[in-house]
Image (cartoon, rainbow, N blue to C red; front, side):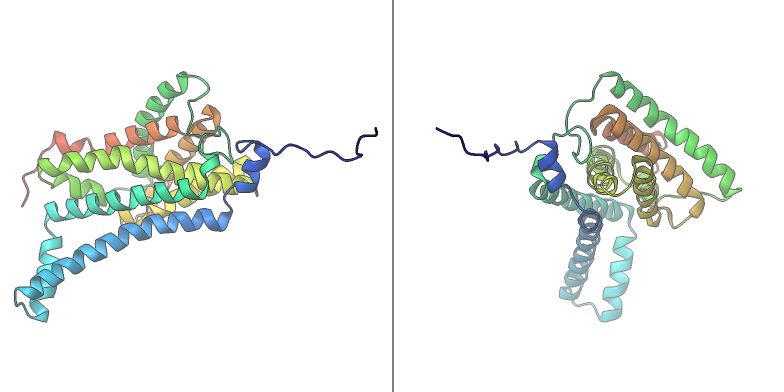
Length: 274
């Protein structure tokens, strides 16, 4: 009996490079998911402010009184911290769920197009991550100080946290040090970097994703352009860790350590609210 001249090939396993390449995020989808993340934070803030306006209106205030009450309430340090906690607390899990639902097979893959949710090649990368997280703020501060030429560099989250009551600083710290770095590393060193590396060489992809990371953080720095190289330096270090380690966890750790140093002043110099 003669065998058929054609044979049916077995399907590729779900985590194979071929399947991963087909399922990898495109540039439009990766930028879109980043926009969704920050838009969710804005939407929660807007809804929270609207709730304040509605509450004030029910108490019988006029239009001018409502507007004044909104500004006065949102100017309170405790309210600003609560707003940051709510916006990040809602946007982060929704974004994680959306990315997981969109590209489920890419999470455990070590290298792009995978997102790197696996252990690094060597435990040494965790030590390197801590060193990078400690070094980045000091190197970045020297660079920013040189570029700023005496101008004071301020950051919204630092100002909010420094004036917030202690009871709210702790949950805010957990979000800024833990949840924020996890989501941002997934978005910028996971989804976006994977999309860019499908189009460009690794060096150009790292540079482009790092620049976008720096640019989206400029509003929180009141658009002080001389803080941009600091953010760019941090992003380059994080991308290097991500690719060298074959895992996203060292970048998450380094990002968290960096944020921890930036917020340490909340507890070193405790300013009474008001």
